[in-house]
Amino acid sequence: MKKLLVFVSILILLFSLLLPLGLIKANEITDLQGKVVELENKLKEIGKQKDSLSREIALLDNQIKLTSLRISQTEAEIKVLEKEIESLSGKIERLDDSLNFISKVLLSRVTEAYKKGKTDPLALFLSSKNFSDFVSHYRYLQAVQLHDREMLISMEQTRTSYDEQKQLKEEKQTEMEELMALLESQKQQLNAQVADRKRLLAETRGKEAEYQRLLAEARSELEAILGILEGEGKEVEARKVSEGERIASVIPTRSCNSSGPHLHFMVTQDGQVKNPFNLLKGGVDYENCSGSLCDSSDGDAFNPSGNWSWPLNPKIKLTQGYGYTWAIQHYPWLRNIYDFHNGIDLQGASLEVKAVKSGTLYLGSYNGSCTLRYVRLHHDEGNFDTYYLHVNY
Image (cartoon, rainbow, N blue to C red):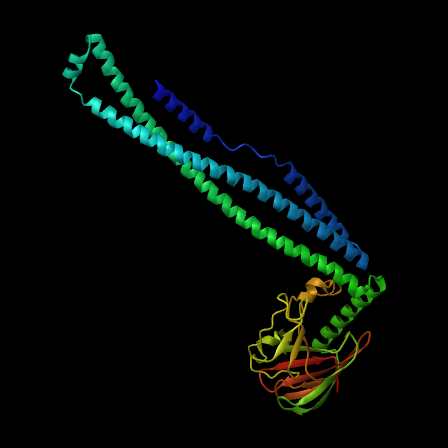
Protein backbone atom coordinates (compact mmCIF):
# COMPACT_ATOMS: atom_id res chain seq x y z
CA MET A 1 0.00 0.00 0.00
CA LYS A 2 2.83 2.40 0.89
CA LYS A 3 4.54 1.77 -2.46
CA LEU A 4 1.25 2.41 -4.27
CA LEU A 5 0.80 5.76 -2.50
CA VAL A 6 4.35 6.81 -3.47
CA PHE A 7 3.68 5.76 -7.06
CA VAL A 8 0.41 7.74 -7.22
CA SER A 9 2.11 10.80 -5.70
CA ILE A 10 4.80 10.68 -8.39
CA LEU A 11 2.14 10.43 -11.10
CA ILE A 12 0.35 13.49 -9.73
CA LEU A 13 3.67 15.38 -9.73
CA LEU A 14 4.32 14.38 -13.34
CA PHE A 15 0.93 15.55 -14.57
CA SER A 16 1.30 18.84 -12.71
CA LEU A 17 4.68 19.37 -14.36
CA LEU A 18 3.19 18.76 -17.78
CA LEU A 19 0.67 21.56 -17.38
CA PRO A 20 1.44 24.56 -19.66
CA LEU A 21 3.33 27.54 -18.28
CA GLY A 22 1.11 30.15 -16.67
CA LEU A 23 0.37 33.05 -18.95
CA ILE A 24 2.59 36.04 -18.17
CA LYS A 25 0.81 39.37 -18.16
CA ALA A 26 1.81 41.37 -21.23
CA ASN A 27 0.14 44.66 -20.29
CA GLU A 28 3.47 46.48 -20.11
CA ILE A 29 4.56 45.29 -23.57
CA THR A 30 1.14 46.07 -25.08
CA ASP A 31 1.25 49.56 -23.58
CA LEU A 32 4.73 50.15 -25.00
CA GLN A 33 3.63 48.93 -28.44
CA GLY A 34 0.80 51.46 -28.38
CA LYS A 35 3.19 54.29 -27.52
CA VAL A 36 5.57 53.20 -30.30
CA VAL A 37 2.78 53.39 -32.90
CA GLU A 38 1.73 56.79 -31.54
CA LEU A 39 5.27 58.17 -31.86
CA GLU A 40 5.72 56.69 -35.34
CA ASN A 41 2.59 58.52 -36.50
CA LYS A 42 3.83 61.73 -34.87
CA LEU A 43 7.15 61.44 -36.72
CA LYS A 44 5.30 61.09 -40.02
CA GLU A 45 3.39 64.29 -39.30
CA ILE A 46 6.54 66.21 -38.32
CA GLY A 47 8.24 64.96 -41.50
CA LYS A 48 5.56 66.71 -43.59
CA GLN A 49 6.34 70.11 -42.06
CA LYS A 50 8.48 72.72 -43.80
CA ASP A 51 12.21 72.07 -43.49
CA SER A 52 13.57 74.06 -40.56
CA LEU A 53 15.83 73.74 -37.54
CA SER A 54 12.84 73.42 -35.22
CA ARG A 55 11.48 70.58 -37.35
CA GLU A 56 14.82 68.74 -37.30
CA ILE A 57 15.09 69.12 -33.51
CA ALA A 58 11.51 67.87 -33.12
CA LEU A 59 12.29 64.91 -35.39
CA LEU A 60 15.41 64.02 -33.41
CA ASP A 61 13.63 64.43 -30.07
CA ASN A 62 10.85 62.10 -31.15
CA GLN A 63 13.29 59.62 -32.70
CA ILE A 64 15.15 59.56 -29.38
CA LYS A 65 11.86 58.94 -27.53
CA LEU A 66 10.88 56.25 -30.02
CA THR A 67 14.22 54.44 -29.73
CA SER A 68 14.03 54.66 -25.94
CA LEU A 69 10.56 53.11 -26.04
CA ARG A 70 11.77 50.33 -28.31
CA ILE A 71 14.61 49.66 -25.89
CA SER A 72 12.10 49.41 -23.01
CA GLN A 73 9.93 47.10 -25.11
CA THR A 74 12.87 44.85 -25.95
CA GLU A 75 13.97 44.77 -22.31
CA ALA A 76 10.43 43.80 -21.24
CA GLU A 77 10.38 40.99 -23.83
CA ILE A 78 13.77 39.79 -22.57
CA LYS A 79 12.45 39.66 -18.99
CA VAL A 80 9.48 37.55 -20.13
CA LEU A 81 11.81 35.19 -21.98
CA GLU A 82 14.12 34.94 -18.97
CA LYS A 83 11.20 33.84 -16.80
CA GLU A 84 10.04 31.34 -19.40
CA ILE A 85 13.53 29.87 -19.79
CA GLU A 86 13.99 29.70 -16.01
CA SER A 87 10.63 27.95 -15.62
CA LEU A 88 11.41 25.52 -18.46
CA SER A 89 14.83 24.75 -16.99
CA GLY A 90 13.33 23.86 -13.61
CA LYS A 91 10.54 21.87 -15.19
CA ILE A 92 12.93 19.90 -17.39
CA GLU A 93 15.21 19.14 -14.46
CA ARG A 94 12.33 17.85 -12.32
CA LEU A 95 10.92 15.85 -15.22
CA ASP A 96 14.28 14.26 -15.84
CA ASP A 97 14.68 13.22 -12.21
CA SER A 98 11.10 11.89 -12.00
CA LEU A 99 11.29 10.01 -15.27
CA ASN A 100 14.54 8.34 -14.29
CA PHE A 101 13.12 7.30 -10.91
CA ILE A 102 9.83 6.01 -12.28
CA SER A 103 11.55 4.18 -15.11
CA LYS A 104 13.63 2.27 -12.57
CA VAL A 105 10.54 1.51 -10.44
CA LEU A 106 8.55 0.30 -13.42
CA LEU A 107 11.38 -1.82 -14.77
CA SER A 108 11.71 -3.45 -11.39
CA ARG A 109 7.97 -4.07 -11.21
CA VAL A 110 7.80 -5.47 -14.74
CA THR A 111 10.69 -7.84 -14.02
CA GLU A 112 9.02 -9.03 -10.84
CA ALA A 113 5.67 -9.39 -12.54
CA TYR A 114 7.29 -11.26 -15.42
CA LYS A 115 8.84 -13.75 -13.00
CA LYS A 116 5.53 -14.25 -11.25
CA GLY A 117 3.85 -14.61 -14.58
CA LYS A 118 6.10 -17.58 -15.30
CA THR A 119 5.00 -19.34 -12.09
CA ASP A 120 3.63 -22.84 -12.75
CA PRO A 121 -0.21 -22.59 -12.56
CA LEU A 122 -0.21 -25.92 -10.72
CA ALA A 123 2.20 -24.53 -8.09
CA LEU A 124 0.07 -21.40 -7.82
CA PHE A 125 -3.04 -23.56 -7.41
CA LEU A 126 -1.42 -25.71 -4.75
CA SER A 127 -0.26 -22.63 -2.83
CA SER A 128 -3.76 -21.16 -2.87
CA LYS A 129 -6.22 -21.76 -0.03
CA ASN A 130 -8.97 -22.71 -2.44
CA PHE A 131 -10.03 -22.39 -6.06
CA SER A 132 -11.48 -18.95 -5.52
CA ASP A 133 -8.21 -17.79 -3.99
CA PHE A 134 -6.34 -19.24 -6.98
CA VAL A 135 -8.54 -17.32 -9.47
CA SER A 136 -8.09 -14.08 -7.54
CA HIS A 137 -4.29 -14.41 -7.51
CA TYR A 138 -4.18 -15.27 -11.18
CA ARG A 139 -6.36 -12.29 -12.21
CA TYR A 140 -4.34 -9.97 -9.97
CA LEU A 141 -1.09 -10.99 -11.68
CA GLN A 142 -2.61 -10.38 -15.11
CA ALA A 143 -3.97 -6.96 -14.03
CA VAL A 144 -0.59 -5.92 -12.60
CA GLN A 145 1.23 -6.91 -15.79
CA LEU A 146 -1.26 -5.02 -17.96
CA HIS A 147 -1.11 -1.96 -15.75
CA ASP A 148 2.69 -1.90 -15.81
CA ARG A 149 2.77 -2.13 -19.60
CA GLU A 150 0.31 0.79 -19.81
CA MET A 151 2.45 2.82 -17.45
CA LEU A 152 5.55 2.19 -19.55
CA ILE A 153 3.70 3.52 -22.58
CA SER A 154 2.59 6.53 -20.54
CA MET A 155 6.15 7.15 -19.41
CA GLU A 156 7.34 7.01 -23.02
CA GLN A 157 4.76 9.66 -23.91
CA THR A 158 6.00 11.75 -20.99
CA ARG A 159 9.56 11.33 -22.26
CA THR A 160 8.42 12.65 -25.65
CA SER A 161 6.88 15.67 -23.94
CA TYR A 162 10.15 16.19 -22.09
CA ASP A 163 12.07 16.24 -25.39
CA GLU A 164 9.58 18.70 -26.85
CA GLN A 165 10.08 21.06 -23.92
CA LYS A 166 13.85 20.84 -24.28
CA GLN A 167 13.40 21.86 -27.92
CA LEU A 168 11.14 24.72 -26.81
CA LYS A 169 13.80 25.90 -24.37
CA GLU A 170 16.42 25.91 -27.13
CA GLU A 171 14.11 27.98 -29.32
CA LYS A 172 13.54 30.43 -26.48
CA GLN A 173 17.28 30.71 -25.93
CA THR A 174 17.82 31.47 -29.63
CA GLU A 175 15.09 34.10 -29.43
CA MET A 176 16.82 35.54 -26.37
CA GLU A 177 20.13 35.85 -28.25
CA GLU A 178 18.38 37.65 -31.10
CA LEU A 179 16.69 40.05 -28.67
CA MET A 180 19.99 40.75 -26.91
CA ALA A 181 21.59 41.61 -30.28
CA LEU A 182 18.61 43.85 -31.13
CA LEU A 183 18.90 45.58 -27.76
CA GLU A 184 22.58 46.33 -28.34
CA SER A 185 21.77 47.73 -31.79
CA GLN A 186 18.99 49.91 -30.37
CA LYS A 187 21.30 51.30 -27.70
CA GLN A 188 23.89 52.18 -30.33
CA GLN A 189 21.17 53.86 -32.39
CA LEU A 190 20.05 55.87 -29.36
CA ASN A 191 23.61 57.03 -28.67
CA ALA A 192 23.96 58.10 -32.32
CA GLN A 193 20.67 60.03 -32.24
CA VAL A 194 21.65 61.86 -29.05
CA ALA A 195 25.01 62.72 -30.63
CA ASP A 196 23.26 63.91 -33.81
CA ARG A 197 21.06 66.29 -31.81
CA LYS A 198 24.07 67.69 -29.98
CA ARG A 199 25.97 68.03 -33.27
CA LEU A 200 23.03 69.77 -34.98
CA LEU A 201 22.81 72.39 -32.24
CA ALA A 202 26.59 72.89 -32.26
CA GLU A 203 26.79 73.28 -36.06
CA THR A 204 23.86 75.70 -36.26
CA ARG A 205 24.52 77.30 -32.86
CA GLY A 206 20.85 76.71 -32.27
CA LYS A 207 19.85 79.40 -34.78
CA GLU A 208 17.33 79.02 -37.56
CA ALA A 209 19.25 81.41 -39.83
CA GLU A 210 22.42 79.33 -39.58
CA TYR A 211 20.51 76.14 -40.38
CA GLN A 212 18.93 77.75 -43.43
CA ARG A 213 22.38 78.97 -44.57
CA LEU A 214 23.79 75.43 -44.40
CA LEU A 215 20.73 74.12 -46.22
CA ALA A 216 21.09 76.75 -48.95
CA GLU A 217 24.81 75.95 -49.34
CA ALA A 218 24.10 72.25 -49.74
CA ARG A 219 21.38 72.96 -52.29
CA SER A 220 23.60 75.38 -54.21
CA GLU A 221 26.54 72.96 -54.28
CA LEU A 222 24.37 70.12 -55.56
CA GLU A 223 22.96 72.37 -58.28
CA ALA A 224 26.48 73.34 -59.32
CA ILE A 225 27.84 69.79 -59.33
CA LEU A 226 24.94 68.46 -61.38
CA GLY A 227 25.23 71.41 -63.74
CA ILE A 228 28.94 70.79 -64.26
CA LEU A 229 28.38 67.08 -64.93
CA GLU A 230 25.66 67.98 -67.46
CA GLY A 231 28.07 70.25 -69.32
CA GLU A 232 26.53 73.55 -68.21
CA GLY A 233 29.79 75.01 -66.91
CA LYS A 234 31.80 77.51 -68.94
CA GLU A 235 35.00 75.74 -69.99
CA VAL A 236 38.13 76.76 -71.91
CA GLU A 237 40.63 74.21 -73.22
CA ALA A 238 44.01 74.84 -71.60
CA ARG A 239 46.63 72.28 -72.66
CA LYS A 240 47.75 68.67 -72.70
CA VAL A 241 49.02 67.45 -69.35
CA SER A 242 50.82 64.37 -68.14
CA GLU A 243 50.14 62.20 -65.11
CA GLY A 244 51.24 63.90 -61.88
CA GLU A 245 51.49 67.36 -63.45
CA ARG A 246 50.18 70.33 -61.45
CA ILE A 247 46.82 71.49 -62.84
CA ALA A 248 45.36 73.72 -60.09
CA SER A 249 45.46 74.54 -56.37
CA VAL A 250 42.86 74.12 -53.64
CA ILE A 251 41.32 77.40 -52.53
CA PRO A 252 42.83 77.91 -49.06
CA THR A 253 39.81 79.64 -47.53
CA ARG A 254 36.04 79.46 -47.50
CA SER A 255 34.76 79.79 -51.07
CA CYS A 256 31.69 79.25 -53.24
CA ASN A 257 29.74 76.25 -51.84
CA SER A 258 32.70 75.32 -49.62
CA SER A 259 32.91 75.96 -45.88
CA GLY A 260 36.68 75.42 -45.95
CA PRO A 261 39.60 74.20 -48.08
CA HIS A 262 38.96 70.83 -49.70
CA LEU A 263 38.93 69.19 -53.12
CA HIS A 264 35.72 67.64 -54.44
CA PHE A 265 36.99 64.94 -56.83
CA MET A 266 34.67 63.19 -59.29
CA VAL A 267 35.11 60.60 -62.06
CA THR A 268 32.88 59.83 -65.04
CA GLN A 269 33.19 57.33 -67.86
CA ASP A 270 30.99 57.79 -70.93
CA GLY A 271 29.06 60.35 -68.89
CA GLN A 272 28.34 57.96 -65.98
CA VAL A 273 29.58 58.75 -62.47
CA LYS A 274 32.09 56.20 -61.10
CA ASN A 275 33.48 55.47 -57.67
CA PRO A 276 36.93 57.15 -57.55
CA PHE A 277 38.23 54.53 -55.11
CA ASN A 278 37.94 51.87 -57.82
CA LEU A 279 40.52 53.80 -59.87
CA LEU A 280 42.93 55.47 -57.43
CA LYS A 281 46.02 53.61 -56.21
CA GLY A 282 46.01 51.77 -52.90
CA GLY A 283 48.75 52.00 -50.30
CA VAL A 284 48.59 55.78 -49.94
CA ASP A 285 49.19 57.37 -46.53
CA TYR A 286 45.83 58.63 -45.34
CA GLU A 287 43.60 59.66 -42.45
CA ASN A 288 39.88 58.93 -42.54
CA CYS A 289 37.95 61.87 -41.06
CA SER A 290 34.63 61.13 -42.75
CA GLY A 291 32.89 59.82 -39.61
CA SER A 292 32.10 61.18 -36.17
CA LEU A 293 35.84 61.54 -35.48
CA CYS A 294 39.04 61.08 -37.47
CA ASP A 295 39.78 57.34 -37.82
CA SER A 296 36.60 56.39 -35.98
CA SER A 297 34.98 53.08 -36.90
CA ASP A 298 31.90 54.76 -38.40
CA GLY A 299 33.75 56.56 -41.21
CA ASP A 300 33.04 56.08 -44.90
CA ALA A 301 34.87 53.37 -46.83
CA PHE A 302 38.45 54.19 -47.86
CA ASN A 303 39.41 51.33 -50.17
CA PRO A 304 41.38 52.44 -53.26
CA SER A 305 42.12 49.55 -55.62
CA GLY A 306 43.13 51.06 -58.99
CA ASN A 307 46.34 52.38 -60.59
CA TRP A 308 45.72 56.13 -60.89
CA SER A 309 47.84 58.69 -59.10
CA TRP A 310 46.23 60.75 -56.34
CA PRO A 311 45.12 64.32 -57.11
CA LEU A 312 46.67 65.63 -53.84
CA ASN A 313 49.97 65.01 -52.09
CA PRO A 314 49.88 62.61 -49.13
CA LYS A 315 49.05 62.52 -46.31
CA ILE A 316 45.50 62.33 -47.72
CA LYS A 317 42.61 63.26 -45.45
CA LEU A 318 39.17 61.95 -46.46
CA THR A 319 36.39 64.23 -45.22
CA GLN A 320 33.52 62.61 -47.13
CA GLY A 321 33.41 59.36 -49.05
CA TYR A 322 31.41 58.12 -52.03
CA GLY A 323 27.74 57.12 -52.01
CA TYR A 324 25.45 57.11 -48.97
CA THR A 325 27.90 58.72 -46.58
CA TRP A 326 28.08 59.27 -42.84
CA ALA A 327 27.56 63.01 -43.41
CA ILE A 328 24.32 62.41 -45.31
CA GLN A 329 23.06 60.18 -42.52
CA HIS A 330 23.90 62.65 -39.73
CA TYR A 331 23.62 66.17 -41.20
CA PRO A 332 19.98 67.00 -42.03
CA TRP A 333 20.85 69.91 -44.33
CA LEU A 334 22.63 67.40 -46.55
CA ARG A 335 20.13 64.55 -46.14
CA ASN A 336 17.26 66.85 -47.09
CA ILE A 337 19.02 67.85 -50.33
CA TYR A 338 20.60 64.62 -51.62
CA ASP A 339 21.09 61.00 -50.57
CA PHE A 340 24.13 60.13 -52.70
CA HIS A 341 27.56 61.78 -52.74
CA ASN A 342 28.86 61.45 -56.30
CA GLY A 343 32.51 62.12 -55.54
CA ILE A 344 34.96 62.22 -52.64
CA ASP A 345 36.09 65.22 -50.55
CA LEU A 346 39.80 65.36 -49.81
CA GLN A 347 42.52 67.42 -48.20
CA GLY A 348 46.25 66.92 -48.77
CA ALA A 349 49.64 67.82 -47.35
CA SER A 350 49.67 70.87 -49.66
CA LEU A 351 47.19 72.82 -51.80
CA GLU A 352 48.71 71.51 -55.05
CA VAL A 353 46.25 69.62 -57.33
CA LYS A 354 47.72 67.14 -59.83
CA ALA A 355 46.48 65.19 -62.85
CA VAL A 356 45.65 61.59 -61.94
CA LYS A 357 46.35 60.50 -65.57
CA SER A 358 47.45 62.16 -68.77
CA GLY A 359 44.90 64.02 -70.90
CA THR A 360 43.49 67.36 -72.01
CA LEU A 361 42.90 70.01 -69.32
CA TYR A 362 39.87 72.33 -69.34
CA LEU A 363 39.47 75.35 -67.03
CA GLY A 364 35.88 75.84 -65.96
CA SER A 365 33.43 77.76 -63.80
CA TYR A 366 29.77 77.42 -62.97
CA ASN A 367 27.64 80.48 -62.21
CA GLY A 368 24.82 79.72 -59.81
CA SER A 369 24.20 81.47 -56.52
CA CYS A 370 27.96 82.09 -56.68
CA THR A 371 30.78 81.27 -59.08
CA LEU A 372 32.29 77.83 -58.49
CA ARG A 373 35.65 77.25 -60.17
CA TYR A 374 36.85 73.83 -61.27
CA VAL A 375 39.06 72.04 -63.78
CA ARG A 376 38.18 69.02 -65.92
CA LEU A 377 40.65 66.53 -67.32
CA HIS A 378 39.60 64.45 -70.33
CA HIS A 379 41.80 61.35 -70.18
CA ASP A 380 43.70 59.99 -73.17
CA GLU A 381 42.33 56.50 -72.54
CA GLY A 382 39.03 54.90 -71.58
CA ASN A 383 36.84 57.95 -72.27
CA PHE A 384 37.25 59.02 -68.64
CA ASP A 385 36.77 62.54 -67.32
CA THR A 386 37.93 63.69 -63.88
CA TYR A 387 36.60 66.83 -62.17
CA TYR A 388 38.43 68.90 -59.55
CA LEU A 389 36.18 71.40 -57.71
CA HIS A 390 36.87 74.31 -55.32
CA VAL A 391 40.17 75.21 -56.96
CA ASN A 392 42.12 78.18 -58.36
CA TYR A 393 43.99 78.00 -61.69
